[in-house]
Each structure stands twice: as structure tokens, then as C-alpha cells.
Figure 1: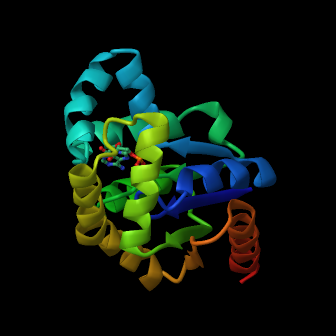
Figure 2 (figure 1 turned 180 degrees about the vertical axis):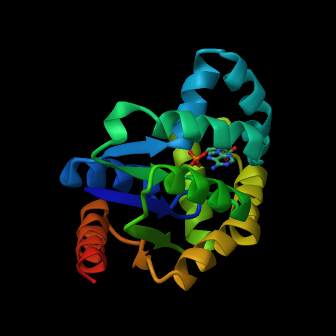
Length: 192
Ligand code: AMP
């Protein structure tokens, strides 16, 4: 049973690594970005609301995001643990997640941060933009998403560091190499 978060700047490969960790540890990976994208594709009311923020590289408001996460964490497949990818991104979301977990008498085991240099990330994301045509992958929007990460999400990382559950992994390198680092880091964090 593992309950964990993966945090990293846009382009750090957190989605890819989250899928691999989820397979290896047998816990469900929940990506708020993926849930939003599925809703945008399905043109649901949630998707229509989220799209305007996503296209601009802004955060979807906490009121929308928090409720979505609460619903998702209430489903039965998370009983054996979960890996949250892309949430929380603001300190208000940290407080909200604390509340949800406290209500279920649950705690996080590990918070994993993937680190990478901004210029490397911009290069990677511009490459991804060509391949996938993601509407939030143009240079101005990419730089805005990186700024938000530094302004808002690094404070989230600092909170978990204070609690002693943060483990950091260098996200630069081949996908397999990073997965090996990540799995080793999780095992040693859980052993503490
Ligand atoms: P991601 O795939 O994690 O990079 O997320 C893509 C986009 O979805 C972000 O740029 C935000 O617009 C939105 N999003 C995902 N997670 C959150 C969150 N925790 N809070 C606010 N917006 C989010």
C-alpha cells in the first residue's frame, strides 16, 4: 500500500514516470491534467470550464480542481493506494488534500519531486508540441506554466520537505534511467 504524489515542472516526464511507478507498485495513477484533457475532449461542462485556463497555461481554479480530486479519491480503486500526478499544485490544494486524507484517516507515504533545468524543459516541450499538438505547448504558454511552477508549486514542495516526506530525483536522462532512480528513491523513502 502506497499513497504518494509525483510533482515536477511541465515537461519533466512526470506522466510517463507516474504510469511506470503505478504498474510497478500496483497503485492507481491519477493525473488531474489527464482528467481535465478527457473532459475537454468529451466537451463536458467541466471540460468547457477547464479549457480556457489550460489553453492559457493557467491553473484551473481550486474550487473546480479540489472537488474533482475529492470525487476521484472517493472511488473504490484507490483503496489500495494511489499516485497523484499534478495535484496539489498550490498550497491551498495541499490544505484541501490534507483534509480529504484526514477524513479517511489516511496519510501520504512519499512525495517525489522530479527536477530539471528550465531551458532543458522548454526544449523538450517544444519538441512535444510538434509531436502531439497539445494546445498548451507553445513557447509563451510553456514559459508561463514554468513561471507558475516556480511561483506556486515550489511552495508546495517546501511544505512536504518540512514534513520530512519529500524525496527528489534528477529527471534528466533516459526514461529507463530515470525510472530506476525513481523506484530506488521510493523504496528508500518508504524504508525510513
Ligand atoms: P499537466 O498535464 O499536469 O501538465 O496539466 C495540464 C493543465 O491542467 C495545467 O496546465 C492546468 O491548466 C491544469 N491542471 C492540472 N492539474 C491542476 C491542478 N492541480 N490545479 C490547477 N490546474 C491543474
